[in-house]
Structures are given as structure tokens and as C-alpha cells.
Image (cartoon, rainbow, N blue to C red; front, side):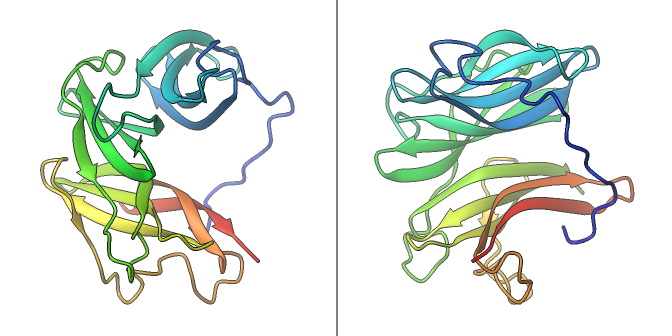
Length: 231
């Protein structure tokens, strides 16, 4: 996270997708892009807030990353349950021919992490599975909510980075492991940084860390990008 291996260049004609790209489902906002190459097209999964105020996960296609074509809703809020008040922050991986979509699930005032599977990465009609919820421990960084999942399948394990919220002004990052992609175990002591990951003497992120994105590099190491908050 502290030593980028490339220089990012701002695209001069941004944005490529704006509010109202797929009305009425994203008329209020578009955010949280997740990019996937399917062998023919780029797929862009993103969060859209509709005219009804609910967040949904939408899909668009492109063959050049600049011209995008709408493909509709991928995931609606559930009729009941842990994601009835909104779904957002998509993160999708393919493992053994199955697509697994991890997402932030909202129910009342709580934020949790859910997962749903698909054979093609477009139609998700299976069981919505609760993956991770708040710790409900007022001494923990994820006391009130968890969200913004980023997952890789590496060394036969699912590795999950997520944002935790404890009601303060600081967001922090947590880490969890799973062997089946459903039952995740929190790591509570990451060499002393487990409950305060992203906070410390770095300077640029002394106000917190959020929006993690992890991936496996060509050297087989897991890498992390995140948004840093600074006061």
C-alpha cells in the first residue's frame, strides 16, 4: 500500500458513467466500481442509489473502458432479512467456475457483509448468505458495522479485508479468513495492528482507513490499496 508499482494517470474525459446512467435505479448516485474482465468484455459492477433512496448493485459492459452499455440490476435489496434496506460495495471473484459476489448489506441501522453466488456472474438468484456482522463489542473497531468487502482466494483460503465502524469519526480496516467462503474468522491481532489497522504514525492516514481493495500480484503477494483519511 505504501510503495505503488505504477503511476496512475487521470483520464481527461472522466467520468465515463454518471448519475442517471440506468434510471431510475442510479438517479441519485453511482459509486463503488468493481471491474472484471470476462474474456470478451469488461464488466463494471457498481452501486446505484435510485429515486426511492435504496442502493442496488448494477452492471455495465464495455470493450474499451470508455464507452459503456447498461446491463441492468444485478442485485436488489432483499424482501426481508439482513440486506432489506440496501446492497452496495460489490466485490466479485471467480473460484472453480462459480462467481461469488460479496457486498455491504444494510438492515435498519446495521451494516453487514453478505455473499451470493452465480454460474455466469450476471444472474444471482441463489441464497443470500450472511458472511460477517458487527462485533457488538464497544471496545472493538467494528462495534457497530462492517462493510466494503474485498476478497481474494489465495493459498486455498478466502482472505477478506473490510471496513469497520465503531461510531467514532475513524474508519478502520479488518481482516478475516475462510476456507469455504462463508464462515469467516476475524484476525484480532495482526502483529499488534488488528484493532487499529490503518491508524498510526504514517501521517497521511492518521484519521483512519476505508475502501480496501486487495489483489494477488505477479509475485504471489497479496497487495492492498485503500482510502486514507487525514486530519
